[in-house]
Length: 176
Image (tube, rainbow, N blue to C red; front, side, top):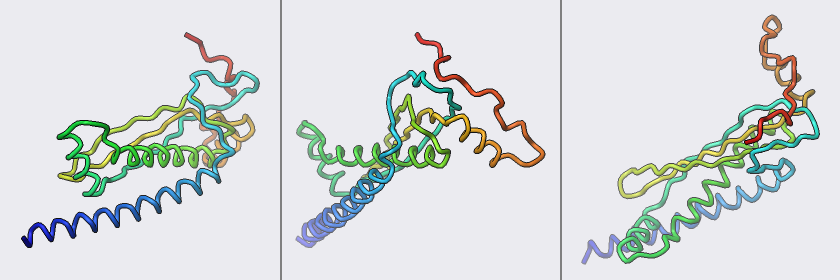
């Protein structure tokens, strides 16, 4: 009888604290999405052709862990079959957080937009409670002047090899 009571206490604690952490994380995500809303992120393979840009790979990754209550509920759903809804919010949080981290990196470079955005997910099994890693990556389009300023600031005074002297015309990407 004690085992059942302890099981129920731990499950209820896992549910309560898991819900609090998830709500806090969603609130943080919404606030940062509003701050970074001015930087567009698109999945198109082809960059805009109206201006010459410097291009740089940017990425953001996050590992989000599942709480025991979600893992237990998902285990029950797996036994009986059906949609594993407890992990849907976990994946949503992971995707949104990874994109926000990628946008923050692009923002530090003064990018005008990020195109060709891709998402990769990986399951990390750690005993009963699992975790997922989400990686978002894309190509940041830097205005020609901002690209030169970033290269000059990041290179030393004697090493000018980091400065790209010829900007890449964004329309020069071969189409397939």
